[in-house]
Image 1 (cartoon, rainbow, N blue to C red):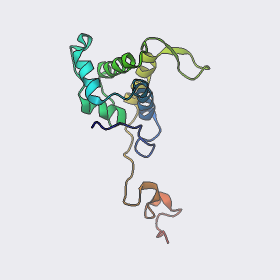
Image 2: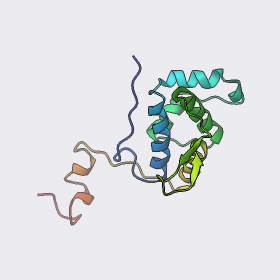
Image 3: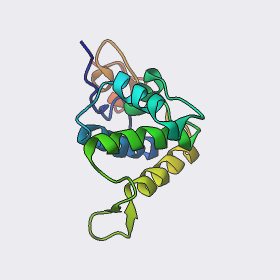
Image 4: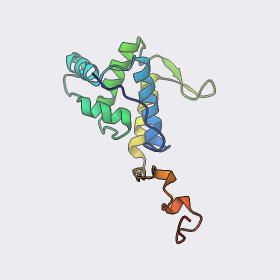
Length: 152
């Protein structure tokens, strides 16, 4: 049975350009009915428009989980194209960037803008993990007012 992907939490993927890119891509994934990674990869492989490259299931999974932002727009565009086709959405149809207050743009251009911002942003440090669940770690300096004092 295929595992259903979920949007990463803010602990897994902190707020910032990479998260914004993933949120936008993930919204297309949801609209497409959360197809399996195998289905997405196969539809990319079967589309003659994408003959020059491929996107593996692992690459797609890492994109949707925020673990990677492909350096090639063609890979992102292929995933977007497949997801939009499955959702019955034209990727070049007009979409409002910031609700009804922003300038209109297409789904493709909006994702491309977010992709560029994610590529240009400095790397995000990995989320701190511990047996205590990250932020609830009583020994973590960030959870105590004074880092040199014990948590009791």
